[in-house]
Length: 307
Image 1 (tube, rainbow, N blue to C red):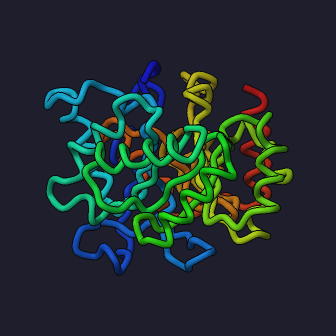
Image 2 (cartoon, one colour; image 1 turned 180 degrees about the horizontal axis):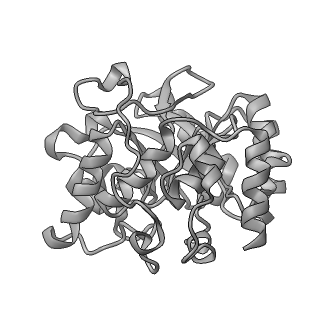
């Protein structure tokens, strides 16, 4: 991470981690209860913080490089986390997960999401098969059409795999505001389990049409780049967290940014990068305790807009 969050955030790793009730499915593994959000198409509950592997997990898959990432994943699961999102286009990230998840029964405790981004049925299916092989798993919980590439063809492939029980959910992803019109069109014509979209306290356009549409259409929402590719951490560097943020349980800036995103009830799970156990503890803390109400969210927006 270009900016050290430990140098930016007051009360770093472990701050504000209060004991809460465990989620029933993971009572034996978890240490705390996390905010749960349901997948509308099934009613399955997911802890409302996940790990995104873009950039952070794109390392050489050797023991020394993987060790801190394994520690992060193990800590994430111990704290009640489940969702890990990756993609074939994230360099070696799928290979790295293939080294981490088979160990210690982690695969069975994780909701694993990946993507397809090839054009044409044969190329798309070949890419998906490589994902299964790279991550050493027989099932993948969610595969989404990455950046709406050949959406119709790839969705047909994914639905066939879902029917066969090899994947459990299908969806589509974008990460730029300019993709929203095309995303909206797909959401209106297709029955999707998930969409993945960019949304952050300083990038709020998704709230205009995409998030309300997802709620109306019964689609779960993963949120990528909730820190704006570290843009937000740069904006608040050297600044203390406002005293009033304690009212909804913020112990650090990561929680400030993530609690803002989670306060929108259409959001199922933001997926910030977490390459260290300390970052896991900071981020997971956002899914505990209170969330800002509408007035507090306006106050948060005004604060960030002014920095």
